[in-house]
Length: 604
Image 1 (cartoon, rainbow, N blue to C red):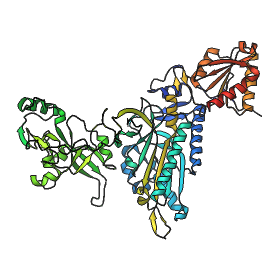
Image 2 (cartoon, rainbow, N blue to C red):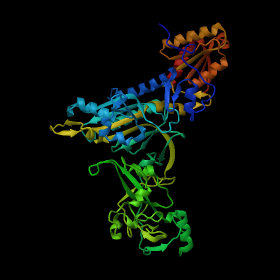
Image 3 (cartoon, rainbow, N blue to C red):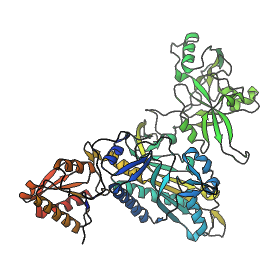
Image 4 (tube, rainbow, N blue to C red):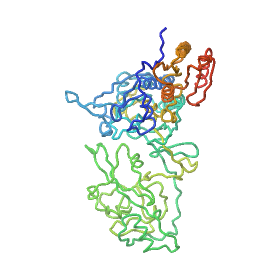
């Protein structure tokens, strides 16, 4: 039987001694230095033999767990027509992140970022009855997003490998069961890959649907900030909700009064003016926390039944003056619409909006009494308690109103999560104050509901012969991103330290020196390991120094290193090194293969 060992004398591999100049995170540095990937363009990578072996092993773990819950694998094209994405409005909603192109006939196509539409249409094409359901389909496919600024190597690229799965059920109960099955599979995948993860409650965003969770790998380089409660539950910042604040007794608050506050367009200037001109009787100073600032925001709506094209709506949002507006958190509540700061043109259409002095009295439910014909909707942040007292904008230049009480003097059209969350804010489950960590998203699960089935008319006959829409779930794992996260969390100052389950080989056999006996002992060990079904990377290079071989072995990161050198062979031993622990032991040559097999079993 011919040897399947990877021989470094012929392996397509070049290791680098220096970090690539443009690599910005450890995984990008080490994967390139160790010869796993090469950069083809910003955010686009070429997979070399070692890298492809690791990627394939991660894919196999994902496949095993998908198959375990009864999901069936399919494979769609990456190049897709425009029409299905127009039906779900994602041709527009994805904006500049979508790679768009035209064929020679000037027909529009895209490189798929995800495949919801194609999965839905496939099931619509082939299934028509409740008897066909439930079914879960998945694929492992290359996806494309035109990232404005690709970074962190494989973690945020323009081309990436992703597993996406979709469940189709006759009712909501079935969707929830499929969701939990998939969620359990994700936990097993990440546990098997030795990748620490935290499930985080998330917003569905452009995907639509109801419940959603992200699986984040905690690490300092992560772009996602998540909030962690003492209970262990975690939330994406956009999905974080504020516990209801108790109502305040305002019976002792004086009547609202409007006062002159010249040159006080900013919170800092207003506080200074209030303390200088209107000091409190009890001696306490006014602070930013006593002010309620109102900001104008524009909602960018897609076309709907009333509007035949996208349209703009100006809204007003009031937040405590000591907090900053978080546009991402605010936008998440208006999805799929987008938000932006109101422009001068937006403000001109609403003369009641007085820049720097806006307050609640000219908006929402107060607008009718103020004589406003088409009032702007007014929202208030969830941190504002009913009965609380504030300094608010006076709705005319140089004036603010003091002793304004929410619920007594003004009302809101709705409550929103509008401000940046901060350390010490109470967790939604009431278990205590929040802390914040950073992580990389490695997977996400959605209960899509009926969004795509209704948009694409996916219906089946139910038990009563009635035509009903199909309930869907969507589940993604960033396979190439997972590989990068493993590299990011499994390395030391010498190189990569792969978990055995994904390493390009299980044992790195090395023959050192020029003694022919060392190479013969190494060849014998390689054969014995292969007889046991153990994958081997064999450094059989004859004109490379032991120092270079050891550095390459540490850089490449195979779990176990077996060294056959002149001294060890003369002593009748093989040296075994553990890459992670850094331990070393000499074992009799005759026992080396079994000793390595035993150590691998312990690593499994």
